[in-house]
Length: 235
Image (cartoon, rainbow, N blue to C red; front, side, top):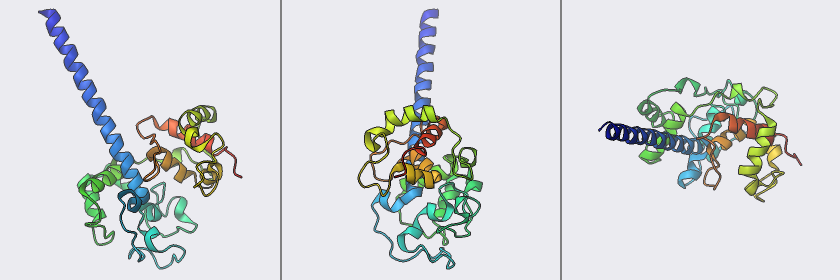
């Protein structure tokens, strides 16, 4: 009887552990998808591109217009710090606050904000889309200031990053980061000029592309990959 009780307990424990792992994997998947929606929800869900500039886009910024102004990252930044982060200057300068204060906020509150009059996105996405985007904002934020410095250098292990890159990324991007042909520039140049964007895409993937998201792995893996990628050829 003792053996049976022990066996039953072992099976139950294994089941609980497996359930916990599955739940974590599902959460990571939702957050990663939310990250791609934050990046470019229009592309992710195949929505028609808005032709008009978003009503909340400040008139002081005349460098961007149309559907670009509807992307969450365009206002709040890849680092989610808005006017206090990388978008404090440059062509995406808007003076709009970031979303760091929303870390850990209730999902229903975030969804209500997405749908409010300021954001104007009620009825533009599915319930699952709103949920995943809210998951990213509430549970998926990473404080990039810990990993990316003001001079765009990255606090990661380049040697480890090279091993990760060659195993996970090089199959599509080749060892020098020059593929696919659709890239506007070599990865080293793209990521070197905007490591915050690179970090976001490593974590969550590229919208509507068969690119693996590193979200389910320890964040150090993504940091190390980024640290190596900024060393790739720029030309």
